[in-house]
Amino acid sequence: MALKVVILAAGKGTRMRSKLPKVLQPLAQKALLQHVIDTAQQLHCDEVINVIGHGAESVKLHVTGDNLVFAMQEQQLGTGHAVVMANDFYSDEDTVLILYGDVPLTAKKTLEDLLSLVDERHPIALLTIILEDSSGYGRIVRDQHHSVQSIVEQKDATLDQLLIKEVNTGIMAVKGGQLKSWLSALGNHNAQGEYYLTDIIAMAVNEGYSVPTTQPTNEMEVLGVNDKSQLQSLERKYQRTLANVLMEQGATLIDANRLDIRGIVTVGQDVLIDANVIFEGRVVLGENVEIGAHCVLKNVTIADNTIIHPFSHLEGSVVGKDCVVGPYARLRPGTELAAHAKIGNFVETKKAKIGSGSKINHLSYVGDTIMGTGVNIGAGTITCNYDGVNKYQTIIGDNVFIGSDSQLVAPVTIGAGATIGAGSTITKDACADELTLSRSKQLTLKGWSKPVKQTK
Ligand code: UD1
Ligand code: CA
Image (cartoon, rainbow, N blue to C red; front, side, top):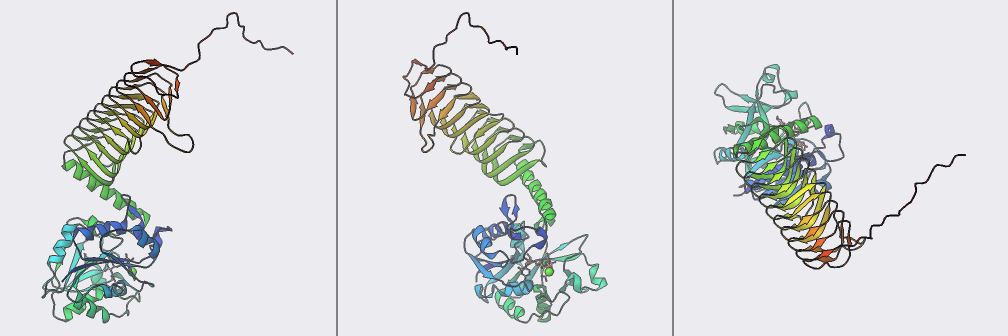
């Protein structure tokens, strides 16, 4: 017996008005379908069967995961028909969990609760929810003993049934053998002329089975996405729950509604995050880290007590303890700051190892560089690392002082303790502990007179 997850993802999503298939639309920078696949993986299922149709080729290309298989549904003839397309991938003994490519946020715990209801005597279990406004959903019809009898779709419901507030989320768990036999008996004589998956409930009841149900803890878990407005409203709800998790871990958020997490963030104690910060990929923040307003951090690790001032952009970087970065700093991939380093405003770094206590405080570009400790880089210093074809290294020893407005033309090495005079263009290695400068001599032309405007 194995657990197979079937994800219905063939729909077009016309209301998205997008070239991108609906299930590839992004929520927190991850495709809707990918959220569902990731949840399936957390359940340690044996196979994830994606029923695809619209945009099938691009859907296949853009999702990843273990044990993924794809079943084509050429024509969308209804949810029941869609599950039939997955028939070859499960056996009678398997438990089949049916999920939806456009319902991205169902919690693992909720699905485990649902799966725990399925056994020999209960071959089918449903995830339902009570909604104040149940319009559009299939209604759960129960008898006087509160036992589930059937699901009626909105378009097929009687006036009385329309008043029912318990609705079908669409998510269900079914034993493979029964699922196959019930699917084979489905018809499409209903208001939409579709093969309704929901009709298998009445079949189960007719065979004498009782149908257990469970509910999610949070309504957000079963919300589907059909248009851009629902997409953004789910994004905000999801972002708020991610922000809540950070606060539960002790982070101080100046405004929990103005934080965006598009990946995985871990925080140490007493982290402070100001307004309008965006985290992408994997971000790790140590204790007492402070992130200023309007910063974007992607795949970054920041050690304890470091402050990132506002409007800084950090990507693929590792920042040590007690550093100060920004405002307006740009750390590009391959930047590594050792403890106590300082990167000031309008400084760009790339593939640069900056030793402890070294400072690049103003208006500089430092790329393809290995820098020692205690270095001071003057304002406007540029490592000229690119000749238009190849990139070259700059090596700067410990305690070097580079005067402002200098260019270090790589490959070049500045020996430890060296001083470079301001305004120098350094094309050859500079000796340790010496002053090196390349600068034309200053001269004054005595008695020179300013040109005078000629009168016509
Ligand atoms: C379905 C349920 C309804 C439930 C609601 C919850 C049925 C008949 N009705 O209605 O009881 O309250 O979901 O949101 O199941 N899909 C395919 N192939 C198809 C048809 C659908 O892949 O042939 C996919 C769609 O892309 C979509 C999902 O299945 O992601 C649901 O289909 P949709 O037609 O939107 O179902 P609803 O009418 O919303
Ligand atoms: Ca429909």
